[in-house]
Amino acid sequence: MKFDDLDAMMRAFEREYDQKIPEGCFLVARLDGRSFTRLTKEVCSGLERPFDIRFRDAMVETARHLMRCGFEVVYAYTESDEISLLFAYGTTTFERKVRKYVSILAGEASAAFTQAFGTIGVFDCRMVPLPDLDAVRDYFRWRQEDSHRNSQNAYVYWTMRDQGMTAREADKTLLNITNDRKKEILSEVGIEYEATPAWQRWGSGLYMEKVERRGVNPKTGKEEIGYGNAIKVDFDLPVGEPYGEMVKRLASSSFEKAQRSWRKRRYSFSKRK
Ligand SMILES: Nc1nc2c(ncn2[C@@H]2O[C@H](COP(=O)(O)OP(=O)(O)OP(=O)(O)O)[C@@H](O)[C@H]2O)c(=O)[nH]1
Ligand SMILES: [Mg+2]
View 1 (cartoon, rainbow, N blue to C red):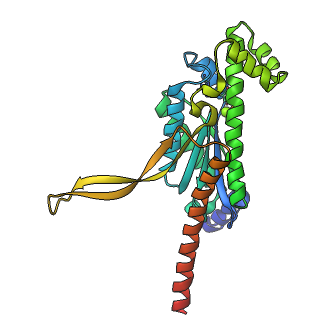
View 2: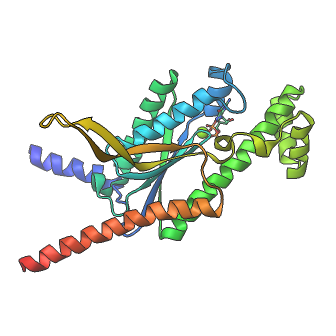
View 3: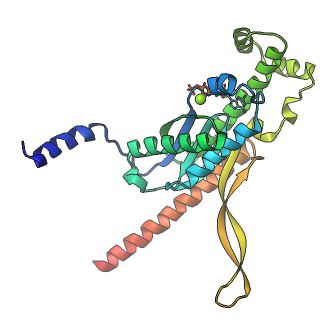
């Protein structure tokens, strides 16, 4: 068989699982640490429980890296061992190939986390196409509510463990008690859950912010003020509806930007005709 024929035959097999993310939808990726329960409880047994600032910072650094590694990310949200990324509407990076997004993002996240934390940490990644702005808002509100629920459970879990329960007993008890009972368990040991740091309950967000930049103009030798974009890390996110509106604003401005660019392209195309 000639090389070209063999090449065409093999490429056809390779393309069998090639999928593209559909156009006309918002796009989110969610990365989640693989077996981080083991990582945080056994491999790094010295971590603070239920929340460790070194772990949080490694997750934030990972999210920051994902915003700068060649994809168009307009918002990143992290809680516990997960990161959600909202991409610019209509992004054409990697021709929207699912396998490129999933494998590169998981690889970049694993490498960045490992470097930031100093222990090997591996991430999985899934892509979530969302039909409209309301779905984007609901997605991020869902993850924020999940953060709140998990964080309260983690406080209660470690309180019960410190009181002598085994891991299995604490897990079982958590499944069978009401929210009011959880609050009681915490207040009995002096923890007022609603007064714990906001990032522990509601997660952290990263988005671009306009910043002033001062520098010396090499031509004139004079100091000048310019403006640029920098990543802002927000450890005190709005909660509930205002949070949904914040995310919706970010998604909607990326949608409008895409619309403007399409209009421009269509206009220059019709002029050419
Ligand atoms: N000690 C400590 N543990 C944390 C912290 N943040 C997250 N974790 C733990 O990370 C784990 C994340 O849970 P999951 O993603 O549900 O479970 P997993 O073990 O990673 O399993 P898979 O995601 O299915 O691979 C939980 O056990 C959390 O308690 C932290 O700041 N400190
Ligand atoms: Mg995990």
